[in-house]
Length: 138
Ligand SMILES: [Zn+2]
Image (cartoon, rainbow, N blue to C red; front, side, top):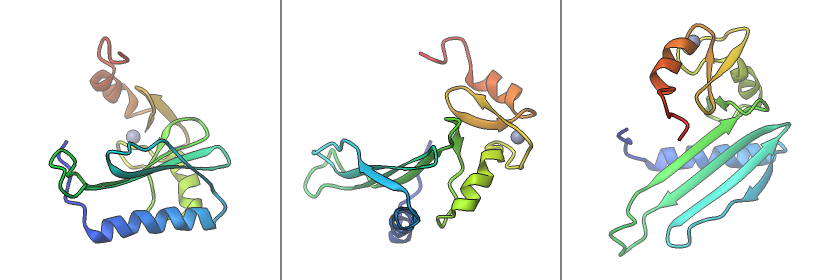
């Protein structure tokens, strides 16, 4: 998948998200970072929800390390991935437990597809056929 250019506004949105979550009572712990990169991983937790925030900037003078990545990934207490609302919004995160990642509709129940994808029961069969090919878990 092609990544779009990370703008200064994108970076700020990720930093603001993290700060807002911490102010809202999430616990924050640093994860291992690769010291060759100017990167920082943190894990935020609240009520069984888990969020990982990654910020990575290019290393000056190191041609192998020139990518910029600012990313937030979230999982619900059920272990399935969640759409991340921007800006940070705790109520929206809880609502997103019932948001299908595929058709973007709110449903009564979401189900697991592949490792941790959250979809509705309608979208699941097609997505499973696409993602859960023989050996998909290897
Ligand atoms: Zn769906």
